[in-house]
Length: 413
Image 1 (cartoon, helix red, strand yellow):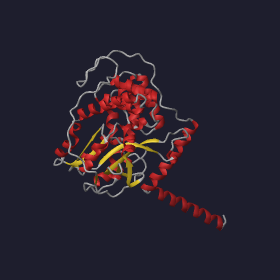
Image 2: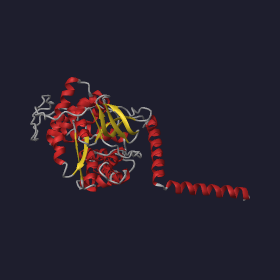
Image 3: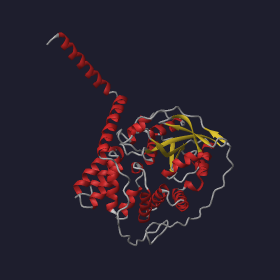
Image 4: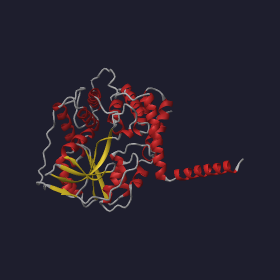
């Protein structure tokens, strides 16, 4: 072997070793793995493109009697008669208010929830970062969603001087009222993805995104937001935020010192402090929205989700049917799982399997989709398929779903 060839081989070996060692750096590894995964998914979906959300399968409705204590029903008809909830009287708000912006934290892949919560916690003196949160609530980078329950669990177990609550059915005045009282608010809204993040050529680029709202100004009709993807101290109009918020049942999150600030939070939330009342208010609002615009798929979806809260599964399934018929974004079931519960408890197993199968085709790393897909298979008598699905669910989020997966596995003889 000539000296020149030997030097080339040594240089090549050194380059490979350097590349290997560089890959071991956690940040570099996450970026490389993320890019590799994106390329693989895009290639797969180019060959077999993702279609639209499947519409409901034919079924024969059966009369049922709800055991829910909230609103009894004996038919599969969504009641569009709103209940009457007393409206609290609040003091007039200032024309503008703001909270000192926390140090900005750019999210890592699939990490807007932990990154946004991290910024929110910094306001209260917490000294960690998004990795501390994601290591607990989503230890697998490919897990693309963090639920409010998971975020609340982190706050309550890792920041014991604080408490976190989340509610649905929020409105612009409510956000302003909390900010004026010096509470930042985290909301779940819609974002449009960069085309470079497309799952394939048919991707609608629609996705969920957490935002931290830290100020408002009535003169410009704008909120100030901290956006872990796009940057700090950005502006968004009241109307635009309302539009983007609507798809997620107007979910909002507030953190406060516990227990000393709890009475103030109760006062600021009014009737929505009570979770059942909050849901009833949200159900009324979403039902009214379907009357105003019967072609609003998100309004029907919100009706379904609010009915699921009250265990009114058959009615919820019908509301979800309407949303699916009108048309939903392909990533909808990456973030919201009420339809899985509704179709399972309404004994519409074919719809459960069709929807969870679709959800898995869009987002393979979704513990919720795998868990409920397993229940659909189990109900069909496919114990082995159910076992594999539940093991997969546990592997995606072992800190939260391993226990649920194990309880499901215990059903198999």
